[in-house]
Length: 276
Image (cartoon, rainbow, N blue to C red; front, side, top):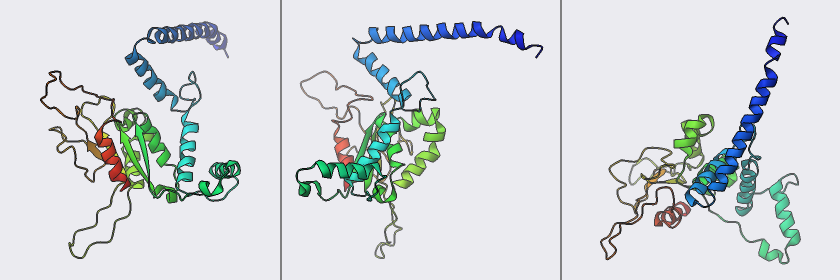
């Protein structure tokens, strides 16, 4: 009590300084946004930082808008359950309420009651490669058995694993791999080899990618090897550029680094392999 007034005397000054700091930071952000509108690279950088920040709950960043993962992840979980036909009749289940709404509004009930898919491929690129593991972790066992995961340019280990090890550390990524690994098949008496457990998760990696990286085991540094091969490992190599060929164009092919994954033939190849 003796030192109470002395300690309390600096609180108004600290509050004033904090308020001015907030004003300066907000003004700096507005200025940065206005100056970066004409630069696609800077806009992309700001967008990536915004996506990373707003993925976490608002208590982590009180100045940001509400966390979009709190809506995106449950909606994706419900969507996957509906597509795979693994929704049980329950009036308290939002997914079942969606099914009832569609049936009520559909003109042709026969068209709505199409058979559910037997294999579903969930694909996430960059920040999506962080959202999709969060979705897989919340899928029921009956739904998870029909789902495969393909991640492209995933920052889960390189960035998120270092900044948030309690959520994306090595143990959590190993658990995700186990969730997507099927039971071992019966041993073949003809070969005598132990059965191999197949993992329904592939992660496409480029050595030139400065954001995404491997999630299970490092790739060899002497090159990706055969770019058309699909191994049993989670991490799969990808050439960048895809090919180097001598033609009339003297300019070297562009290096895509963290972009241009969707047109890459390896994405289609890995997706087909997972669905099979």
